[in-house]
Image 1 (cartoon, rainbow, N blue to C red):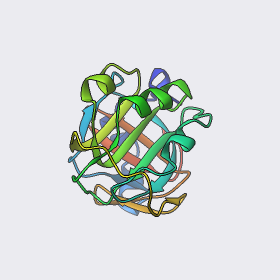
Image 2: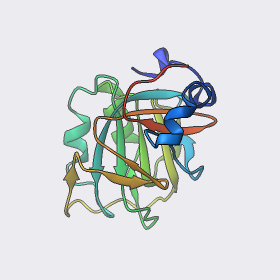
Image 3: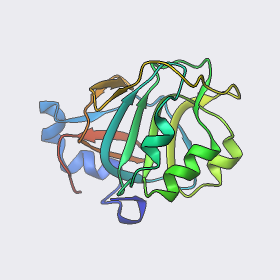
Length: 170
């Protein structure tokens, strides 16, 4: 499910699924992420990846068929360098990814903003990332004060970002 099939505004999804918030099945990420890219609303099944100040393996992942999924890239909240730039945003878009939430920085902001994809990140930083380091795939990550698990559903719009263990509707 990409932005063209966004189920409902995030606020409406929260209202309609309030009981899931109480049980912790629906989690609201802290409002610390800045919007980038042309798609202000995006949603899809989550793929998680954890790195620290490098993006080894990221291009290979984004070159796989995205099928409307959303990458949750946990960079540990580091703002020392960018993890995604314009080239990788375009690769993701071309492969059919709906978007990315980056617990870290982006760069090439004008290029990312010109790309028909949704991106949320903590900030921008012009420094490129390292190209080697430990990469963990399909692991639970702590992003925006919430645990996000591979295979969950993420919904993002101008009101915020939520994740749920199942697909939800307003």
